[in-house]
Length: 342
Image (cartoon, rainbow, N blue to C red; front, side, top):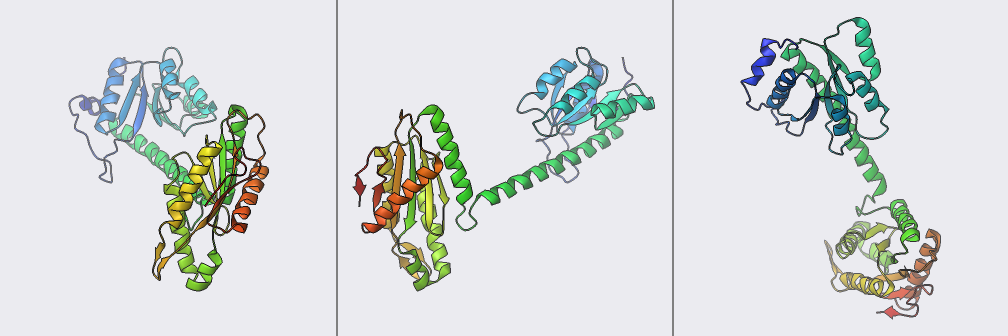
């Protein structure tokens, strides 16, 4: 059994939660402790609890590996070198061989203190190394260093997510931009080829938008675009999608929506714009939409490609414009050809 330093063992008697260096509760932190010595394991567990970590404790390498396969696995692991089933060195190698998942910070514990042992542990994938017995201050310092690395990783991942979001969304309206909404349509078409579910596509265009810009200015035109977008998004189902396809043109993708329901949805969208003027700093402005629809019915075996969907929806949109605007037209290829609404 390993000798436990007095300052480390004192954690058994003091369980008050503490705050981190910035005065913020760090309850979101999580750590895996894999240690086969029950007393040493319990002492380390108590100290991490005192530091306000969420702790998972196991007594062998195989159980540790099972924990690390979970979706909610801890992002920090304290591993004993010598454990039954799978030792800490082998576990480090398995951890570093993974291709997916967030980075796991590994602190290796061992009674070995030879230089070649340190090298072996680090080459196996450990981030840091502690030789038993150690003082609690040293453990705390190593944990803080690991926490900084994990916090930096989280910040970088958040920044990447933000950049991806910015790249996929229209800066004025906040909905998907053209590239993203077309990619989403491609994905739905691919899914539809497997499932043969119904699929509806709507191309919508603000009528006489150039006149709004010419009469009231581009800032008012932007305000109209934003309000039209807000109303469209609010009128869709949670799993529908809307994107800004062009200047004043929108592409809407409605999965599992057959032709009759697509027509009902499009008419609802038309009315949500036409029934109430858009309030602007220059007063209320009447706005209407023309909408072109194309649909594929459930069970229909042939699925057009993305370009065909877009072309047919665009043709139906311009048919709506030719016939007076502020109306809905369905593409001739749809199962409800010939139906229109005004």
